[in-house]
Length: 464
Image 1: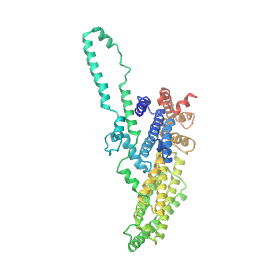
Image 2: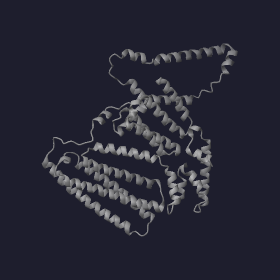
Image 3: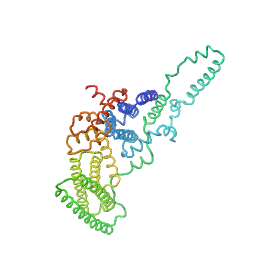
Image 4: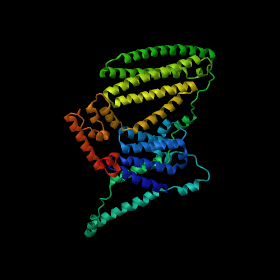
């Protein structure tokens, strides 16, 4: 029964993807993958985390139907590895799920076929009954086929009527490439239907806790010295960042005219300062609170200074957010400016989790686990947004000035919106011509799509 399901899935895989571009087919593949995994791993799908990863995977697949972009395809691929790897061990961290998912997808079949395992008692006879003799089936199919072809060739030379009859048989309906894609699908589903673990990485991850523990090297005199060093160092860093923030606020409040070059330099320099300060802050805090100092009773001042340092870094993030938002307000949205926002969000999460690490006496693995999980969530959420559409919409309706060439050169996800702007008085003749050309090419492509390649825009143009 399992082989039949994999065979049908392989045929569907080739039907979805052979000679087709990405569209509805990737969502259908996502559904098919979930069905295959559910059939073979039913008990795991009762796990709440598994259900969340499944929903995230299906959402990324559906997102590609609404707006196909590189980001949405990457998110779907990452969610695919995450779900498969999670099913191999539901208690592992997300980065271990990525490792297990990738390994299962590439080599799951070979691993199950050739990995050494201890024999189980009283199961030898049943295993022999259930095991399929692939060599026997290969002999049954290949040997008769080869001999039959050989005799056909001989008989063709001996009888012209028989030769004409054989030549009239048309084997053109057999598409070798389609069959090869189906074979690839069979191999893929054979790999992933029963996910496997990568050892010793999975076992090490399960054994590693999030919390720190007091070690035998606990020494009050040494910890007192470390605490003094930490207080002095972090105090000086707090003073330094306060001075920076005060000068930054002064610059923002005293600027009467906003120039693109000035704001561009300020945003980029601010980001560079933010990257450096956060990296240095986290490295220092990780070093200071790496072990027994977390359990030193006189560390209250040091912790307050560390919390203050983290909060001041968050204020630095807010100052960069303000300057970036002003930049966007006057000169429009771009992917780089959106990237700044995403980085600031990740930086804030990193600062907050560092604060939680110090407060809860957590180790570095806690930071890595929580932040990789947060990065995955942000990736999935950001992939659901049609950025090209929103960039174009914001720049036309809200930005004080904009680069028309930039929005025209974006992907086809904004084509229908651009076509609605043809009456815009600010567009010159060249921009109008490029938009019209882009629109007609995109509509032609949509109307040429097969059902596997359908996108949401197909239904939008059909209603016009």
